[in-house]
Image (cartoon, rainbow, N blue to C red):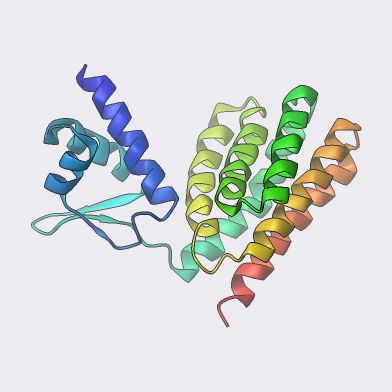
Length: 208
């Protein structure tokens, strides 16, 4: 029972952090969170410890627990890692990608582009990249990329990440999906690299 509650609280708390409903540097008051989630402080603390292991929160002795901050240097390193690792994972994943799953993603992207549901597009972006990465069938890459994906979800759900870039990224995903389904791995790989570069350029241009 305790394990189940821990998992529930972990998922709820992590989702709030990834979606910036809990802001960078925000103090996490255990009493309020326990009341919010309807649990005791034991499963809450267990969930917080798990999130600390993922570098999503920081526990400072005698001060409390805070959401970690993604500064400019961390974001630079995040993009460096994406440039290096994601293309490798994609090449490994390519033979295992399911056309039916990809078509479902394509349909969902199209629906939410039409509806201009930016919040759902952010979630689809996160889930889509996780699906691609998970199919590389390399446990070490999957674990590494999971952390990258979590941190980048925190980037794409920030206020500066405009509707224009959200729609642009979604359109890039549609082209990417088409090339995968058609079996054009070289074109798809180029599109993935361009997608990461376009996102990086947008991020750093938005700082100035």
